[in-house]
Amino acid sequence: MSSRPIYLDSHATTPVDERVLAAMLPFFTEHFGNPSSINHLYGWEAEAAVKQTREILATAINATPEEIVFTSGATEANNLAIKGVAEAYFQKGQHIITVATEHSAVLDPCKYLKTLGFEITILPVQKDGLIDLTELEKAFRPETILVSVMAANNEIGVLQPLAEIGAMCRERNVLFHTDAAQAIGKIPLHVQAMKIDLMSLTAHKLYGPKGIGALYVRRRNPRVQLAPQQHGGGHERGMRSGTLYTPQIVGFGKAVEIALEEQATENQRLTQLRQRLWEKLSQLEGIHLNGHPTQRLSGHLSISVERVDGSALLLGLQPVMAVSSGSACSSATTAPSHVLMALGHSEQQAYASIRFGIGRFNTLEEIEEGAEHTISTIQSLRKQAFRV
Ligand SMILES: *Cc1c(COP(=O)(O)O)cnc(C)c1O
Image 1 (tube, rainbow, N blue to C red):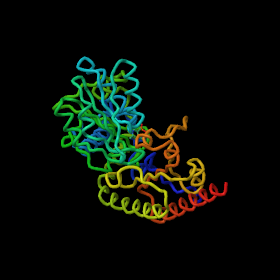
Image 2 (cartoon, helix red, strand yellow; image 1 turned 180 degrees about the vertical axis):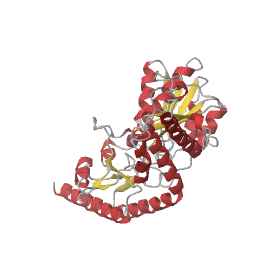
Image 3 (cartoon, rainbow, N blue to C red; image 1 turned 60 degrees about the vertical axis):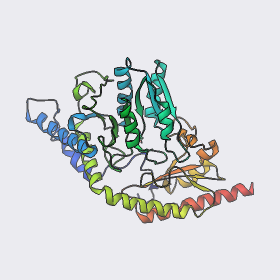
Image 4 (cartoon, rainbow, N blue to C red; image 1 turned 90 degrees about the vertical axis):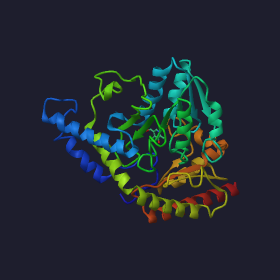
């Protein structure tokens, strides 16, 4: 085990926290009931556990438990939000606004809607990865029904100005959806103060299990209409049919509970580790930080490296550390990342980029070792290139 690479890819996924696993286990075997079974104890105890997670999630974002719809993750939540709103509001208008740096689980449903006749405006971002609010202002049309802007970016870590966007949408009676897969438990999220109408969540970026997420759907001021994308038994108030996955839901609740308890101290610790990593890496010349320097997730560092080949760099890092590259995260393709390209990078710059995701279980020693290995790998690649 000791020879396994240092895990520094916490924005791809995280391990399940032992405390989360312990909370989940009884719900596989002893408390295995169907939360929809209303006639016996097995159903009641499963339903009580599901209700508890609903309450934890609602409290975490200042919503009510009835506004939480469980899904299989953020991909499904994004699909339900975007396609569900499009289908429910198409008579009001057929224009949607989103951003070039969104996750493919937002961009691809929008592309799909385009084939059905919807018009999609894809806003550019500034060099620091943040949207320009005046661009958003110009993009609104009388037929705009939805704006979808993510809370925290998975590839470059930047935090978009949710409260400002929410205010602009509310003023114009346009619904506001945010993909908060990377944000929940890490930064404050407040659906009232930020005027958010729909919010996608997932557990596995937060030391919870994979395969469980949720969509927050506002019920009052305004009441959001949503066309279900999965039909069946009418679970989740008809918005998402399918037997609830109780163990995963219990794990999701526990994961969020722990993250909120530890948020302040953990953010401080992660910020220090990230600063240490950047302090060391930035001693090399030709290293650039991707994304806004301070308006970002605490454990997230994305860099572009001049004068190295991206794939050679990743190959050199792999034995020692697990990080992500600047190519598209879908394993089927090796296109340069659409997020880094949206920052104005060349393809070469996008390829020669590394994302470090520092997480709950990383230590200062791991950061030091990772930094030193990254530096020596870059130096030796540059030397080789010089010889050629
Ligand atoms: C991981 C991620 C998703 C996808 O979430 P799943 O739960 O894995 O489907 C969507 N959006 C963002 C920003 C993400 O980081």
